[in-house]
Length: 591
Image 1 (spheres, rainbow, N blue to C red):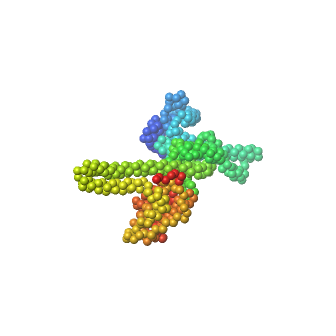
Image 2: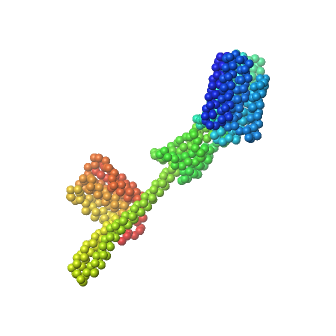
Image 3: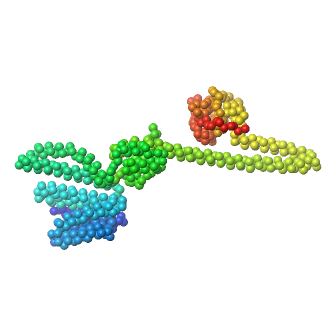
């Protein structure tokens, strides 16, 4: 009796605290009030037992068990009485509870009425509720139904064991009932603590396996005993149990598929899903993810790279699975998929499908990244063109414009004084000649900034040789530079010529300024439709190169025409290597 009373006190305390926590969550206020009142009623009943008020204890316990706690479940996760079904269930539960409290003989039949009514409420509320209500109901239903099944099974065992086991059954019952209020708290406070849908599926499968095996075992043993007219010996029963154990796992697999389909719908065939995905995944990551979700019946899918979400499809869920996206040895991102209703993890077949389509998703991600890179490159080119136009406008307006204006004014002044003061006019013409020479120099500088004239006059090879012949080291000694062109160069596009020339000139300038080299070598060759430039020197290169304006300029010029560039120190000196497309050389060179 002491153990039963202690278990009842535990139930009262937990139920009261659970009601307070549900109230604090701001949801299910009616259910929270019933939980608190039910917990208090249980504690009052325990107090009546301790004070030997035997006549008061049973009605108080019935008040908690048959009215307050059922009303708490009925009002969970929200009280609804406007619909006809909800109103009828509310009246039924209230009437059955009141009748059980005032008339003790009605408690047993009313218990069946309450159980059926609460099961109907769970089904109706689940059908009418939203996703949040359904998660809360799943927690509540799993706990209370699980308690009922366990207690029923324990009752059967206690009945076969004898009357002395019913006291222990009472303790077990009161302790297990604690799970119900706790689950109700989890349902409104932390419904995503665990995927309750997966727990429901596993609980239903486990209960079904137990019931089927017990039914088969009892049926076979009863039939065998009836045929031989006496109880079976221990050995045949043990052999029968061992044989039934072999069927547990296959039965679990079978029931898992049946229960999964009944509760959460059909699952796709993995091979058919992989085949359909291979045909539907294109260059748009969002459409590709939508195809993945549709084929595998997933609630959510997204592609991430570097911690940032690049594309997503569906509604994000709490429980997800992450798979890497690789192209060769490079990991380009990851795909995140949400688990389906009732799943605690992806099945092996689903993971196989995702591994099959992962390379396609990786290619889609790489295509999107290349598209973004191309867009950024185009924006950089447009920005560079606009900056060049701005520079030309500034140079013409601030440099050449005033110079030419001065020429015009000096010409007017010389004309006005050519007869009255020839000497002054001659002086003005001399200044005019110098100013005009400066203007010509400025024009040449601007023209060379647009395109080096040597390229049009001598070609790429000749322009580089001409520039190399003018180089001197920091000490003023001419720097020997060899230019190696194994075969005549084909006609190059203007952009390719300018980029190649500027890269070689900048590389040789860096040799003169920083390398302390005694000689340099330039190699220009054509290989597989690309122009390859190689500039090397024999300067000491013990330390790594510090990126500066020169290196950045060479890389930008190479990138602008779709090329690549590497530069750095080697064991024999500095090296700059660039590879750029030949471009369309059919256009005429400017003259």
